[in-house]
Length: 177
Image 1 (cartoon, helix red, strand yellow):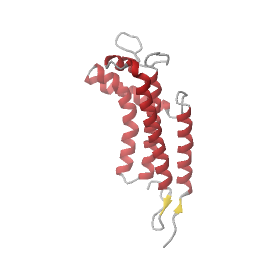
Image 2 (image 1 turned 90 degrees about the vertical axis):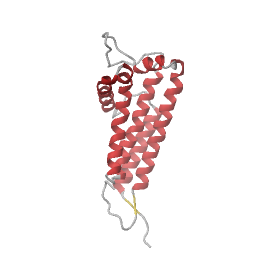
Image 3 (image 1 turned 45 degrees about the horizontal axis):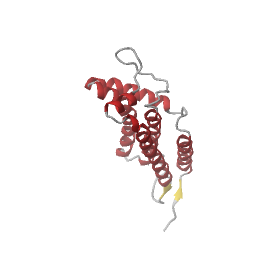
Image 4 (image 1 turned 90 degrees about the horizontal axis):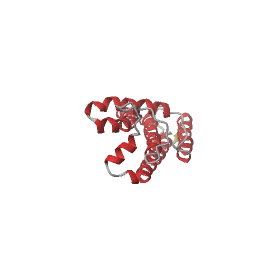
């Protein structure tokens, strides 16, 4: 019986995810490397879901922002590229942390906004949604749920990547597996 071996490039990738994830979790309100991509997916979500009405259009920003990395993770997983699936799964967690900052800003509305409403004024998605749901005073709790879930997803992705960097003796060492 042969011992397990480790794919060094995969292990380094897992370590990068772990370190970057720790940085994102410790400093959630800072602008992170992939937040620009998150913003594009967020704004595209508004445009796409806006066809279904006002509430779906406002919520569509967050839906789009979370859907894109989730869809990428599912795609790689279904292609049997499990190691590759850990990267967009990690991205999903980081995106949830990004959303948590927006949610926690719902009452104070201090973040700079990009989306413009029908009247030409900026709309704070989470202030608008939580107000209509009667949950505005719970913005910190809802934000912490996003934050905690995001941290858990990033941690699971990094640990998954590390475990997938271990090779059985009969496995090929392709970076996608």
